[in-house]
Length: 265
Image (cartoon, rainbow, N blue to C red; front, side):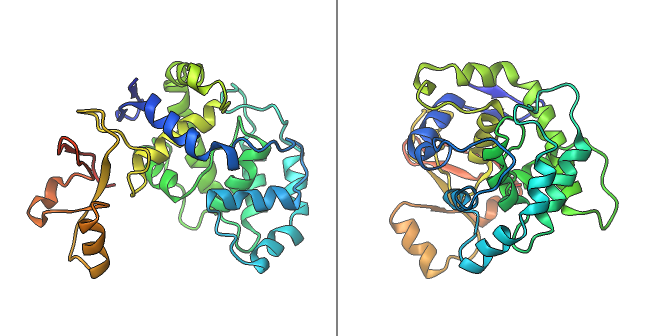
């Protein structure tokens, strides 16, 4: 099943990519039941580590824990059942929530959204650097003034994400309704975010060749090869790219049919 986004991009084999992802990663984050209330428990904070939130020291975790009161207050103004599909959203309340979180040391967009997605799974996507970079390439929202807060940039990005979601909602709902997904309930927001992440992250995780449908896909790496890259290439973990193809360089390589596709952003 392919999905055509309103940005003009197409996600090939979206069903297989999504199923591969949930079979591998669902249990330790999405499948963990957490209350969708307005309280941040220590477990809520630590759970984000399963999504590589970079809270990798006790001092970083303590920073979130000791400064969580303003976040909880802002979160209390956002109903637990609020959805990004809702016609009337309080972007002001959402920005206030992000600001309260991003004002905490070590809690930028990626960390805050990985924690907050579990509290409001139908509203807040995980907004890490992969998603942010993609959103910035296709956003039709007006540019923000220089010096705007990280929270303002998050709201701008999520407004663009909402447009992508609404434009592909029928396809997203079909994916959620696949028999294979019955054991892996995800919100529409999470389904789209996962697919965008798969399409744009750099390691070819969960990719499927659009030509032969093989799962034997590796990333293409350009530039002068280091000893480490040479070892990875010898192990067929990456392909070393041809510098002569720089103007139209592909990003992914299928080791089965040798098809190459994708583009760097």
